Length: 124
View 1: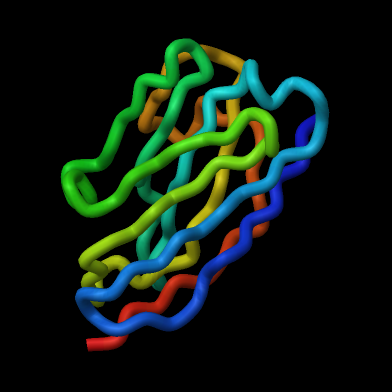
View 2: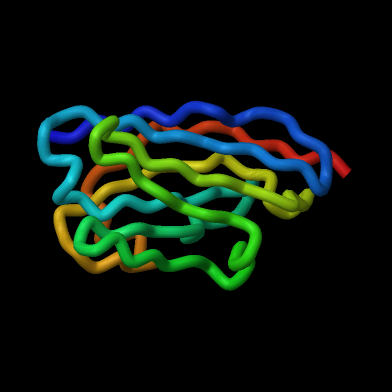
């Protein structure tokens, strides 16, 4: 079993930056593909970014490419999402997810573990 705990959300102005973190329990973190999803009010949960454990290839949603960076620190069992040049449309609850597979898929149904989420609000 893997438990995920997000932190680092908050309120930021348009154009600002924020980093959210996700700490994972257990000893198998280095064999997990990690991802971030987000859900805005009234919308479905959407893929943001993912990072595999095999050579750490990454994948991003088109809406965040060039602005967001996903990274991982296996020594700390933590995955990060650095968000720069934030826009009001980035406002959402951000969820961390994990799967026991090397493929950094965008499909949320393939992720086995989820955190409780952290709120990110971008003011205009």
